[in-house]
Length: 162
Image (cartoon, rainbow, N blue to C red; front, side, top):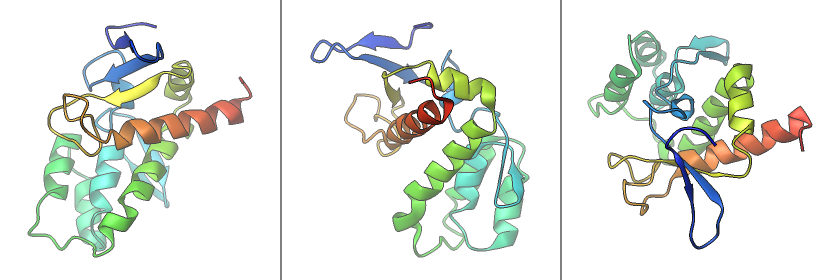
């Protein structure tokens, strides 16, 4: 494994890949600049798509999609002056999965990189998020890592490499 993101678990001896936007595995981040098409629209990053889908208002969605960076999209998506869709909690994981799947199926270079991680446990490492990431200390749910591992498995079987 490359980069500094590799760690072996003492308990399981299974490799872990801990990723952040600015490291060798940064392509896994929702902030990574890999565009994709979903529902007839091109999205600059999976962060743009995820944040825009928090709202039913197509004008808000379009405005978020057009923002210059994923950080600006994240800020716009967290703005509670905008009416959050009522079903958000029940659909957010499906929306994240859809974005991650589209990102990797439409960008073969990073799909190959993801497949090459083998059976490593993928962990988004940040103190800023304990739902999608590890909370910085491993106590978070790491739901993005779980979705990435699911997509990796689907890509691996579709690729026929296993």
